[in-house]
Length: 477
View 1 (tube, rainbow, N blue to C red):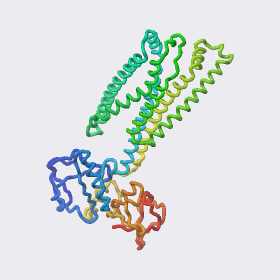
View 2: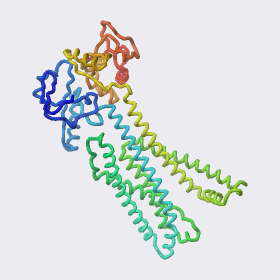
View 3: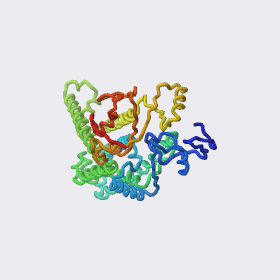
View 4: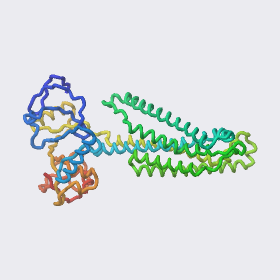
């Protein structure tokens, strides 16, 4: 509009002076009509504009502000009142349920982030387990020497747990600072797209992160550390570990189950948790099997006459891997699972972005003119022609609510999907014409043309959602 403060603006039959400019609206949603610019005028001036009349689109909104318990309490009361009174056309809107497209997009994004969190936890568990094993191998001789000098199991265990706890504390503090810095960096990079600042994290995400990190650390590094406290002094002679104690196995199982429970509590998606964990388990078995086949092939190769012609280093490497087949299988499986998780996250990210882009066709209209009054049609047509648009068609639009299908009252409770319930609980945009629009295509039936029999053409997606078929009778007001 190229308008400035103090300029006059025509709204309906009235002239208003621009006193302020709206920078941000808290109730601005993602619905189709909300993309249009809005002007705020006094309620006492509304009647004199002549905007409210037959066929006008009028929506009444009640904006509430308060604490979370107050908002949830009012929402519960309102939903119960709407259900008891069977009120139509009244709904409570939030970012998640205002529009099906937005809700679906948010659900996909939330599921993707949940999968990222789950994959990150599993990768961290593998990394901790491998690092703990290497740490135990390096500390085994030292612990055996301490045993020779009279150190008890409790003393060795306390020392190792102290080291493990310090590692966990430093890692969680460092991770928290890295997360905060990453958020600030992201806000700087997206400063031109986001007009508000992300809220600072509350104490609960920090507590949850610390608990989750310590569970991962003690659940997957605790069992190997426990074997250090029970190592025999004969380790210095025999170069071997004893059997893994039952307590270590119990700690590993408890840590694994606790981590899965925490991930489920964070994601609230049991299906995703079962699917991802099961896929990880099957992947681990597959990669372990492939690693075993590779080791078996190396062992057969080591027995062949060709091995005598290769270098000593190669023969020694093959012999070492063959003797430590179990550890080699674990290493190969862990590395393969980590790479698989990273590739899976990358592919799902690409698919998520492509699905968002596919929601809007390349030739989708991006300019809409609505609420054109009869005395404005000629002027609008001249404006379009002056702008080089000669094929634009103006269609009448009226609002109507679907009340009956085949003489049966239509109620939201009659449908299972949220989209169908939303459709029957809202007003439809109805239009009328004898000529089939050029950008429309019939998928069933025949165009009614000049027929005097009352007929209606329904968009195929709406017909499928509401289970409408050819020959059904519809009533509206």
